[in-house]
Length: 351
Image (cartoon, rainbow, N blue to C red; front, side):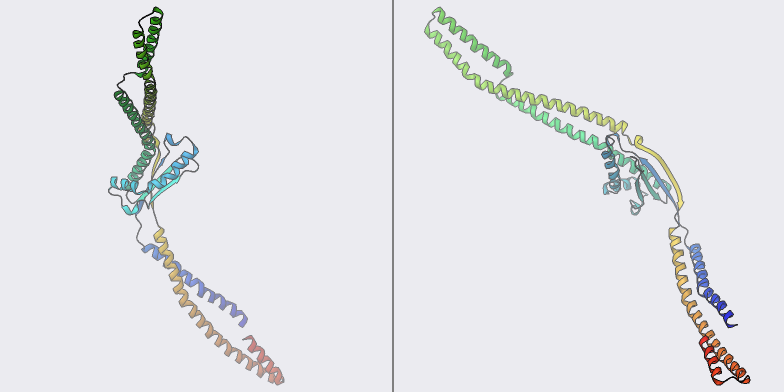
């Protein structure tokens, strides 16, 4: 009978130690979940954007655009821009509740923002998308504007140097003046030759020769002036061509910025979802369940140990009585004292 009762007691003790605390823990978790404050309804607004045409020339340009979007979205300048245009936006939530994710291996990027107010969530992602796309598209315009300013400055310097040279040297067109000088030297040479052939007065011939020598002496300086003039004229022409090309590039970038790369053309899908975040309630429930389990185990385990000890004492007394009864029976049957002792020892070992 003892052997049959022992397994039953073990099952009951297991249920006392584990099933009861687990039930208490589950009940504590359920109560904590029900009593926790109801979380507010949240709205998650999202838009998808793609890089402007100026950033789609290569895979490297697209990757650079995608990698820069998240950094730009969290920058102080962009944050100040968004907060300034959305007065109801809590500064503590931006950019904490912002998400910037690339859609697979495509060039599309998803911007998402979560807020308790639907209009704030929607306006935040819309304002952010327009600012990021405007910055990306305007970069090419800024670049061409910088190049145009440089080309215009070089043209102004070249024209100033050319004007100063012509004014300082009192020349209108060195090309024409140099040709006239050469023609005059050649004409004097012809007159000198004719005068000698005609037997003209030597004094007249000497006068022609002195005039020719004077003009020949002017030729080197006029030649240098001509070279300088040509170099300055070439600089002006080159600067003018660069300025015209820079102007054409700037006009094209302006067109791309205002038409092709307008934010309205680069924004894809728009979406807004409503949900409730039960994370805090679940965490509280789990904590309450864990505390309930620990407290229940702290009570049940000592109680089970105390009950087990009392039952063991009772089983010890039963075994001694059983041994005495067996001894009496053995004496009545004429068994020896040693046999009685062995039976009693065996009973004690079973204990």
